[in-house]
Length: 467
Image 1 (tube, rainbow, N blue to C red):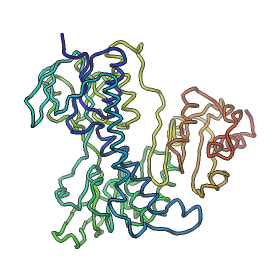
Image 2 (cartoon, rainbow, N blue to C red):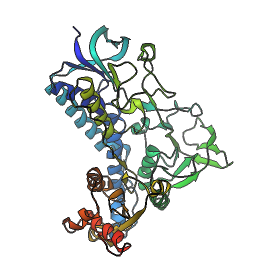
Image 3 (cartoon, rainbow, N blue to C red):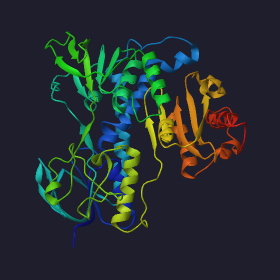
Image 4 (cartoon, rainbow, N blue to C red):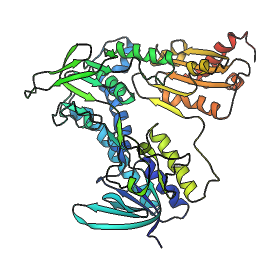
C-alpha cells in the first residue's frame, strides 16, 4: 500500500487546489514544497506581490487623483523602497498563513524539501538539514510552476539587472528603467514604475503590443502607456549590454536599430521556463518541451497515466486562475470524481497594466477570419456617470454580438476594475446569452457595470434597434 493516494509536488495555487480537492474526497494527500514558505510564485514572487505593488504605486504616486482633480502628481519625494514593498510583504505573509491553515485543516501532510521522482510512484524529498526521505503515491501531481527565463546576454549577478522575480527585492527605486520584453509581465511592471514618475523604456522584438488582445484594445493600451511616459520600442532587440562597475554610471544598451539606451536599471521579462529540471520526468516517459513544459492531455494526464501536471509547468496560459481549475479537473479524473469534466470553454484574461485590460471570448479579428457576422457595441467610461465620478475618461467596454442571433461572442474592457467587470460578460458567454439579457437586466446606478447596457444599445442602434 502506498504512503499516500496523492503526492503533489509544489504548493502554488494549482498544488494547493489539487491537494485540497483530493483531501475533500477522503484521499490521503501530501504536498512537497522546496521553498521554506508555501504558495509558489503566485504568493511569493508573481501574481499577488505584483498586483499589490501596482496598488502601492497608484497610491504613492497619487496617480488616481490625476484624473479626479486634473492635478499632475508624481511619486512623493520621501517614498522609499520600504514604503514601496511594505504592503507587498504583508500580503505575502497573510497568503502564506492562509495556505498553511487550509492544508492543515484538510489534513494534508506538508513535506518541506526538494522533490524528485526515483521511480514512477516514489518521490524523494531532499533538504540540506535532514536525511533524505522517500514517499510513495498512487497518483502524482506535478505543480512545480516556472521561473524567469534568463537570456545569457545579461549579467544577472549585477544588482541593477533584474528578472521578474528579483525585481521584488529592489535595493532602491530605479532612477530610470529599461524593460526588455513586452509580454504581460513586462507591460505590467513598465506601467507600475512609470506611474511613479520613473522614466521607462519598453523594448520588444515583435511589432505589436500583446497580440492576443483585440486590435483596438492593443492600440488603446499602447496609447495609454505612452501617456504614462513609457517609450515603446517595437521591432527591436537588445544586441549588447554594458554594465559599468560604478553603480552611478548608466548601463549602456545597444538595440538592433543601432539606438543606444542609457539606464539606471534593467528588468528582463523574456518569458518563463517550467521548473522540471531535476524532477526525473523524462526518464519515466513523461514528455517535456523545449522550455521544460510538461505535455499533457485534456485532463492534464501525462504520457504516464498516473502522473498529472498542472499550472505554469505545462505552459500557456500560465494563470493562477486556470491553474486551480486544471488541478480540479486532474484530481477529478485521477480519482473518478467528476464524470469527465474538462476546462470551461471560455476563459477570462486579465492584464494588470495601467489601465487594466480584460477580455473573454472572441476578438473582432478572430470573428472576421471566421467570417462570422457580428456587430460591436461600445460604451466609453467618459459617458458613464460612475466613470465621471472616478475621473476615468479613457475606459471602454466593447461587446461583440452575432449580427443575426444577437448572441454575445466577446467582451473587452479597459479601465478601472476591468478584471472584475469582465465577469458579467463571462457569465453571459458561458450561458450562451444574447443582447436581451443586458437590455432586461437592471444594473445599480451609478456603476461601471451599466456600461453593459449602454454597449448593448449601441450595438442595437446599428441594427435599427431590433431585438
